[in-house]
Image (cartoon, rainbow, N blue to C red; front, top):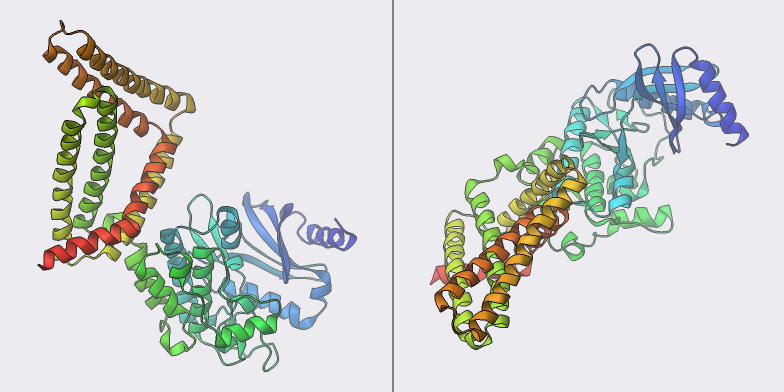
Length: 476
């Protein structure tokens, strides 16, 4: 720690002595250093943001820092970080806020990469709620970016922070006329041009946040601030579908509208944006029953096709002379299942649902399934999971061995009645298939892989092609 930092920390400890116990530094930005601390009176963890002494000496920056706290303190909203105390003494200028145990959206994207569409839709929707509340009270944030959005670890709730350059409608700005404040990569065209702003500027910035969270890259970024601002004013972003083709169409349309250069073409308010996201960020309970049923049938279709295919290959290896019979058996089973799936797909289309609706529903189903897996398997010890997997895998191996033995005996020991070997063979195949399915169901990683594969099949080219073919057949 350098001497100035040491002096700053010492000054903060002196100013908060007997009230707060400073723990450690947890963040640093252009307008302050954030420390984790404990409120001794209420015995709770808080965050304290302190203005560095060299900045506190500048009247304009000092007022801007205090304005952040005062503005945020006016916004009592579940998605805005609450402010508890503001203090500007001779020793230190700081404010105390709730400690959010989580990470910024930037940190999350850097840690895990591009985020799932439903998670992004939920984050943007919650930020929209906070912005709608702020805008209704005359507060424009003016610096919405991924660094200023926090995601709580335990609840996944989203919080908006850092109102350092927010503007209240009932107060004149502290900065000089024409001075542009904000972050160039997230700045609206009108903000880059130094024009008067309204809530639609925050909506544009939120669109860039969504773009970044979905792709892991910024739509506008250049080596200099001036070049980046020029891009904001003149260039259209690379279409989201060019970077991530499987995204729900409705979500990409919403983000593209947020990123319109003309503010009149954007959503008129943050509340309108939040309402638009209802169709994408809806909980699984709101999924249409016909969509939920189709997803279940499609998954069963894939699973049974896999089982039929594996069993057919085993039978061909054991009884190669019966390859034609086995192939007919496999194709008949596949045809029967496919006819049922086609009938359900036609019913889905007659009900007004398209492949885009299925994609959106699949994203909901996928995220809920992955959360279920995390919840269920986290309650089971690793040793128990391994025992279950090995138990069912043993049954599958025994069934496979029984199938091979039955085939060999049937071919080489003619004295054994054929019906006995047939019964043993089919029982062994059943044991093999059942053991294989249960082994897969007992392993979280395998279930997760199956979920990702199943949803990917129907979201991508196969699903689109299947729906097109069924739609054409229905039109005849």
